[in-house]
Image (tube, rainbow, N blue to C red; front, side):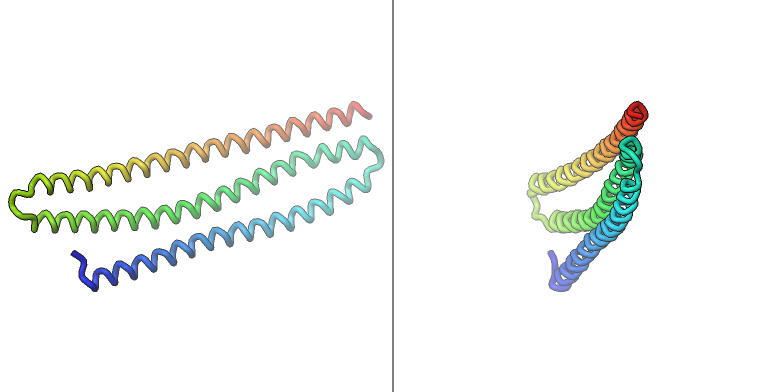
Length: 188
């Protein structure tokens, strides 16, 4: 069993882990805030340039052509922004996941040490109970590994779906921009 020193050491490690996780989360938030500031500056600059260009249009055809030419870059910027947010979230999640996995591995190791200690000190005739405890610990370990694998597979599927969605959005904006340019030419 745990003595007082082991208990204090475990609590210290838990506090350090908690603060480490909080720092990782704040780093992710900082990155998103920085990205948002950059995106806001870029959007403001784009809005100023686009307004100037729209005000200098000589006729409706030039205005329609300008509008069509702005659609695709705006969509690409929105997709790039979404991708950057996703990347920040995925990286932060991966870092937190590594810490949690390490903590769970330590916990599992400690549980196995306690079980082994209990097995060594088990009274004669308790072999069935010992086997049952070992089996329960092994089943819990296997279940945890299965959940980890499923979570990784789900993350891979989400990544694949995100990639397909962003590709579709860019292609759709290219098609709309091409149609708008063609309509502007026909209107001339």
